[in-house]
Length: 544
Image (cartoon, rainbow, N blue to C red; front, side, top):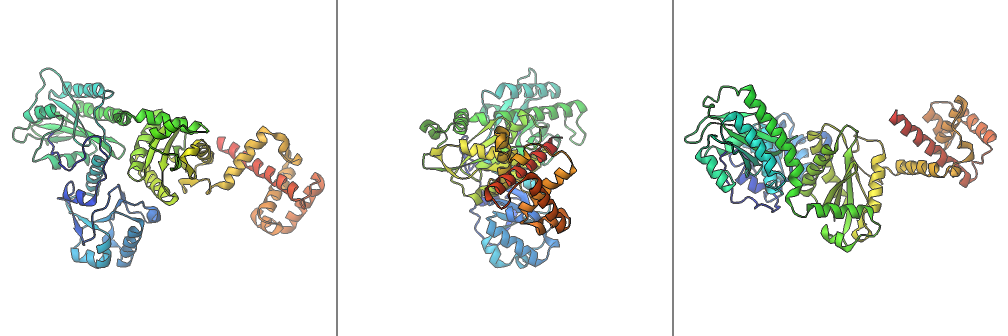
């Protein structure tokens, strides 16, 4: 399909960051205007709708969409703007209302510090989101033609062309032709012929509106003949909410665009878009020649005690660099290897926009990301934003873990053991980003289970056999509560029994087990054995 090639777009292979002033001057020029005079020379990294529950974790660089601003009180709006300014939000986006109302609501002082964009009434929120996401994608490392994908995409184009009878093109998110049909006798117009010659679709006066309509529509879209440009049908190529490209088919029988496509044409377009999406995701990371080398280097860094200088050089790290490891995997066993690869690709794109990402790799059932030079706060912000984006794309919950900081010279084997231990803990949807500091007690209990399994003789003698009756179970739970709550009063509250009941059970335990709770070493051994027993019981309950 026809397309305008912007001279400001990044050249293939480059990685630049979209700035707000570029978005307003190019993609969103006709649909959004700025209220106030705050500087727009700030990066646009993602788009999110406002959610009061997640305001404190909103990441920097976000376009914050605020659909319901007119229903809010001025105080609430100013609090939102102040919080957004503190979090480093790129801009707040609203729709409707007069400029004077917006100035009064947000105050001139805030509007001098934080851009507020007003989109035109004719534009839907989904449409603005699609335009912004596409612009962000065009400035990020993109999907380009490769030896691994061309034959497959040409086959998709030929299959669609055989049904339509007209030339078909498969384009990426930057509107570069990745493949085109070669079916004998197919109908071709000059616009398609020029695109095939240049591998970049040519300019057209309808380009922007047509692409915008396709990207905001779930299924195929029809366009009538315009001048010498023949009728077309088009469909977006998506993976969840991520825009990967489009498919355009010349439709010699499509002069009446108000008539629905035949079932055969609709089906072949939808199947083609699904197949192209899967293949583009699989081949995305092959576009750079050294991708596999970085994966292999990171895999070695995850497994070796002493990293080699060559592996550090491959991931562009020096021995003095400070590194952290991020690990992510699906919380259930329903996802397959293809889903994990898609997770890696999607999260890699999200994290690249926010952090210095050295390398990433899938190992087993986990995706690992090596990050250089990120503070704990910045890494948590980036991970929170990435997981929110994942929730819109993947139906399966995702677990994540971040390691403590280490020097590149020390390698990442210890960091991997740390993140793997965190991921073994039960998934907690209320705390999606966790470090070992967040779950130190649970990690200790997990390690105690492993220790006693390997060395049973270390377990306290009174607990080497499982509980045999209700009385034994009560003793163990009471003694554990007594340890954890600092005596009879706290244990009684936790167990919802009388204090005298707790004292009686503890005394009976001391007499029958012949334990000395006034001996710190024995008390510690008994407490550790009780904690490990509880952790083992909880793990068994999760698997049944």
